[in-house]
Length: 466
Image (cartoon, rainbow, N blue to C red; front, top):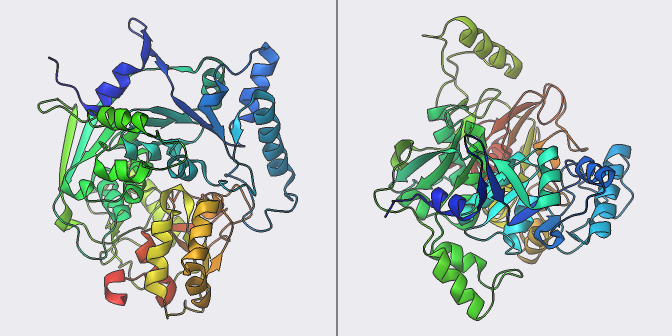
């Protein structure tokens, strides 16, 4: 029998039709929609007189440009308000489940899917958002799509898609204290570059990956696209099953037993061949931080910004341009750099484990006077748990501001923007020019590093602070 990778097994099971020398007609199990990329798709369906084929396979929530304060009031920004209203109208008209502002399960689309048990192993999942790769942590093929493809999935429950190449990234060994999954993925991207996995679907493997919680695995898969990958996935195991058991949309009773039996088959066969492989030692990974304007420009917090030695032509020009935007110079240390804002949140690190880790490290301490500190839960459920566990009290006593669920300062599509020229250490996923606001200077790091920076007021190694 042919030896198959996990990606092959899921992909092949969802091909409706193969087009010779072309893409596959590929069936989608679950489709998540939000307020930004869905309105035009619905409008086009209406123009064509086409309905939604399987509304029960689509789930909606507003997240990208919703305010994170006063969510019970009318949205002030006109465009944001119109987009959220259109999402409501379209979901109601087509019978699509909507987790609206103020509802018990409102939140960032890639947080509420796993939280509710909608995301399950073996599924194919799409959304009009690049970080749909998050759901791959459950052993699912999940990827972002464009507005025209959102329309296609709504109308047919299928998408035209060419099969990606396969890459495996293995991380073996034990992580040192203070090193998190965010550090793992920033380390990998720094090693292979922001374009190093272009054209591939990445499977993460190895003892260091297997030791991670589901929330930590979601962080890894979330940032797969930041190295150019089509998506990332991790084989399901007992950690996955324990996380899903009892969730609202998880199978129950005999159906649960059947599901787990199938899920256990979702692993790469011994001897299956990948198009490319990388191996990394967990012992080499330390707390990481970015210094430039793409996620591949990352170094160990205790390291120095790379020099221009060996660079030439356009590579050197673009590198210096990036450093100029950030106000940094080649060869200098990143530690000790003053910071203005810290942000904990996003579909990368807005889960309860992230908020717990920050609260644990700032308990009994105060943020530095020069720091504005925002904590934004990824969902109403995360917010509720943070209150019930006393985390909010700890964070507020330390000087952090807890806001309401949403994408918030991950991207400049809402009111939570970093002012021009200011430095922000962020748990989000992108540090492009203007990503967190026009002229904002973003450095990506783990929640632990953010907590340390908030207390000290400058870039520092969390292992030395705590």
